[in-house]
Length: 477
Ligand code: NAI
Ligand code: MG
Image 1: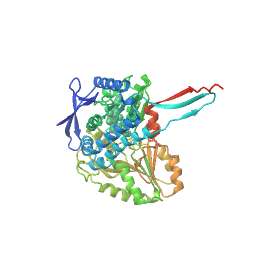
Image 2: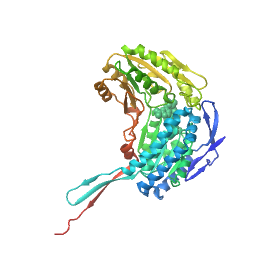
Image 3: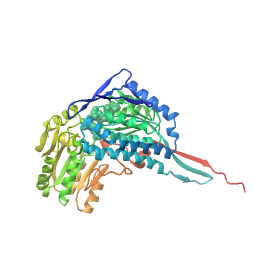
Image 4: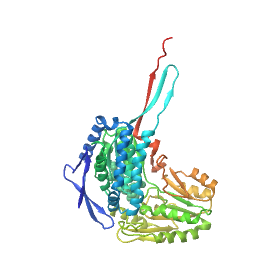
């Protein structure tokens, strides 16, 4: 079995006490890799390395062109090693290999390229001042960034933190989720191969509470904490960060509404809505997990939607034909299964399958206050509710503690803009799903998070803006 270590100060290493953990392949339900299990000690060592690389090393002092070139080399290495990186995420969490190869991997490389160029091409402000003064802004790197990542898009979401942090001259300690550790070690190895100096990209494996994750959030030498995961965890991390006044960026859960109006292009609405909930077996914070369909088309839509759900190819995620694999872990399978067991509605299709597979599931007749309608289930499970008016569906869509994303389908231009404006969520997709632009703000309202990622928004988080004011004396007359 292959084994994977931490990456600390430019070297791959075991934990001081030799502890390790197995990574479980959720399709075979057996260990496929052995990974070092770090704790407080490894987190502290990694922060020490990142601190030294930031305070004394070349990385923060390099020009944008030189740093950007290193990130472009890393993107090239990600492309060259795409098959192996994709297979690591597939074995770690059951993501279909075709999805990993066509989505996660290209986006990971693109993220490094984008932020390398974005930082290099960014401008800053000058402030024309009266009375013989001149002022301008500078965006200084913030320092040591702790990046704590989830397991649903392991490499891709880790990169969405690491790339902007590095491009702006920070050093990083990355803690991947304990269930999906392997691709993070591979990324750390590739960063060294790309010529990124030792201590700039550190990877620490281990659990969150009372372990490596918590230690990172409590370390006063950390300057920024970027977290993606469950809202409850976000609260715990924010409380820990508050003691050191460490700024936190949070990308948390979602319970996205997907609204299909009677005037929608039905074929397109069905096909996007299927992607909206069954992509990555529904383990997507942006999923459209509450489907609202205007009553006149309810029967027709549901017939097509259920048919399309039943046609999805389920099974071995290593098979290129597979569209939906098992959910990511035993723990997560228990969680999704419990929601299905306790759900009060009518199951139109789906339910449990072989092993940790949950078949594409559609549930009707669920009350607005049922747990499955209010909580982030994070599985291939959608609830369907009919509606009769625009005002009614906007109210229903906004009746959630989350606010990450929403989808709407209509061919009526005014309605599209009107409803997009009224929905309380950070991303609104009109007649599409998962269309992203790395310049645009990405993040959530309410319990879905704090702050935004993307372009200028990432710069705001990963830098300390500075104002320089100077006297410009007049020539004596
Ligand atoms: P989680 O939010 O607990 O874990 C995410 C990351 O945070 C992992 O790297 C974990 O080790 C770390 N972590 C956990 N507690 C921490 C602490 N006290 N201090 C520092 N780091 C900590 O999510 P988990 O346990 O993997 O999954 C639980 C549920 O959360 C899932 O069943 C799913 O429903 C939901 N989830 C939602 C995600 C989203 O993007 N909306 C992503 C992952 C999970
Ligand atoms: Mg947890």
